[in-house]
Amino acid sequence: MTCAVAGCGLLSHAQTNGILNPLIDYDHFLAQAAEVGRLRDQRRVTEEKFIEMAAQPGTIIFDARSDDKFAKLHIKGAKHLSFSEITAQELAKIFPKKSTRILIYCNNNFLNAPDTFAAKAAAASLNIHTFNTLHNYGYTNVYELGPLIDIRKAKLKFEGTQSGAGSHVNSRDGPERAEPWAFGFRPPARAARPRLSECPLGQSATGGSALVPVANYQSSRCASSTGARAFGHGRLC
Image 1: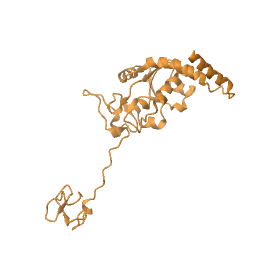
Image 2: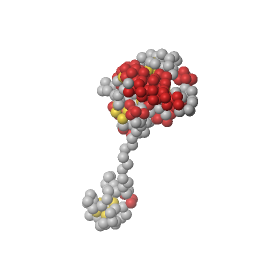
Image 3: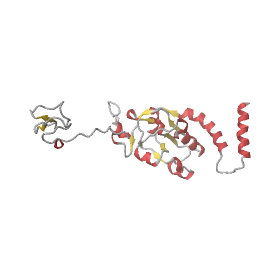
Image 4: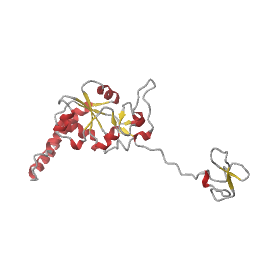
């Protein structure tokens, strides 16, 4: 009874707020979301199943992220249309028929890739909106990548301007592991150190007792005037 009353409240608000727009139907969205939610629960698949299905003829991997993020990194072979650009006409260019099997994924499927797969709020996940939107356009054969995957350990293959070592290659020893900066991370910057030429004759890098460079010391450290290596007396050069 409570749900019925709440539903009547929504309907009443829709009918009496006086602002009409036949191209925006929130009530239909809510009704569809409930139906799609039940279907979606049955269509979320593991990474292994996603890979298996993607290899089968007639299946299309679909990426609805921004143009920029897609260009940087995406699952190999994925077709792209930014979510904001979705229309019936644009979808028809990607999917040959409404019954085409479609595999979707989004930012919230991957960890440790903040520059390419920046996570959104859980309730605002792009997968949720993409699944619902495709269903509203009549594409009902949709499956969604379910788990949250550390991209450095992913079995999926990637491509894009930031793929680098990230395009995993299956081998007998398993998928190759990419360096973390292949997905947007960068190694920490090291503090600058003065060069050998910056240790003037007769002066230490710390301004202490006289130091002179030792020409045949390949590590370019400074040494004291006695010829001993100055591990504790001067700064590394």
